[in-house]
Length: 391
Image (cartoon, rainbow, N blue to C red; front, side):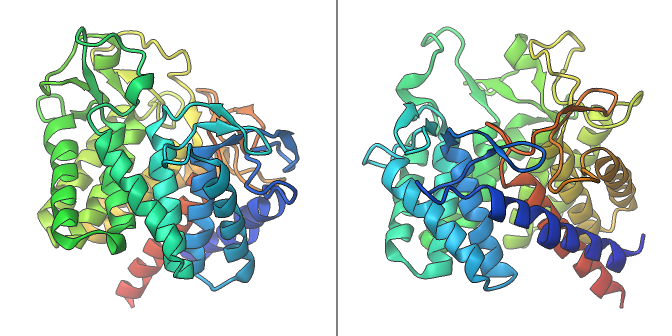
């Protein structure tokens, strides 16, 4: 692979295709915040605002301002989104709603912990960009709320009947692996290190099951496997994404053995989740091979493949494992052939099992300004590092 040429491809796609799409089409100039429901051409087809996607877009433009270029347009985009979220996104005590109408009136209660995690990331990153202490305060207060809800992420909005089947989910410890590094500048050092240690333990020693060679999505409160729909569920994309978070933590705490282990788990999950008939990674699987309750189990989703690209190229960069590079090349070919729209900006999100486009939208209730640009940025940066090492 020509690492320099491939790095330039990812950089160009980010700066000249994907970012302008969101910068030009998503900002609500009248009420503030962002539209995320954008069709293939970038036209708005629904004006509801989803708090976690608002947070993700604030974070994206603030992060790129901090790490790529001091673009005033990027910073202005992030600040206007943050001011909208600060005013409308929570109940006054930093309990973050799930969704709002266009003007900012709440539509769905603060049941979703990921509204909190991405608000925390957004205000933490924007505090770095602006030096605004109010943004730092919001990030810290929100992080405290997240920690209060670790054992019961949905809070009082949990639909599960208490005491019958208490399952805990992989998604929160996985996100905390990333969030801990994102707001490290706001946290006490000892507390930060304990948080990192706990997150790594949960991901690598609890949800990763060596007897299966798999990362599972749900476990009982006693960390046991559950032979139920939820207990058998495997989400390969989640597991693979978590492994690059763990690799980043391994770099932060200088544990190369942790990085190597994360890379090996990622390779196991890729092999398990790859559709050997049509290519691409399955969305959901059942660890015992039963039918899943998710009817979309065999769809190929943008975020799964983009996060896997990041994991593979980081794995190769940090371990030198050529199998990781081979997987990167395989995923690169599949993703650029199937998810990239050759005629309009931004990438498609949803394919059927055969790799054909299911929905022509570029953004919606679940897809916003996040996985595609973050993935392009991460791959560009890592490919450049590999190229520089080879000189």
